[in-house]
Length: 210
Image 1 (spheres, one colour):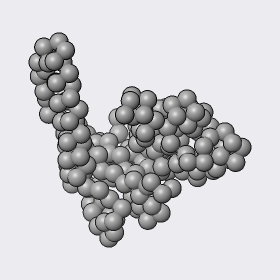
Image 2 (cartoon, rainbow, N blue to C red; image 1 turned 30 degrees about the vertical axis):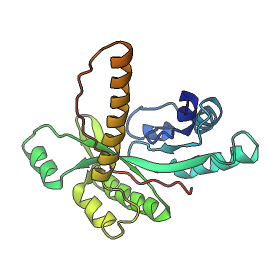
Image 3 (spheres, one colour; image 1 turned 30 degrees about the horizontal axis):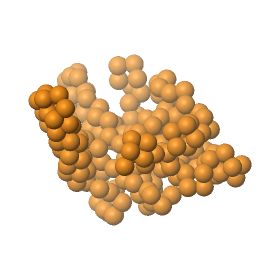
């Protein structure tokens, strides 16, 4: 498989639109331009919308895809994937650090819906996050607690792939890629590479049927 085939088969699962600007100026991407670029310039079959703790762009995203398909501007096979970028923290840790004026780390996690049930879970998580919004260092924060994930997703574990599983697949793919690079460089240039391990912190849903 050549490079162009790999590029065409790629689906980006982390993208921001203008709807990421609710709390901060983050993106100038408009849906029609994004969709046209991904479908026609990159030749890819879809992408995931994962705005900064915002699901309000989902309907416009889906409708724009439908309109562009109806006008023949993009292929019928193009798929809109719905997700969210959350800020994951521990509830007790957050309260402790606020009381003691310590630095708070808001860890960014990508969540992608597998199906309508998965998107319902995203909406429930997002509602909880926005209901506890507070200002911290000049910015409105909308934290998701670890307990939210346990309480909402644990009731229906079907849509979720645990991060440990994702890590195994990513590490395996990375190992194969690095091994191929090592063989290439050793054979062609006799160069040895230093390898470093990395950790992944993505919890993900995926919706290939949408």
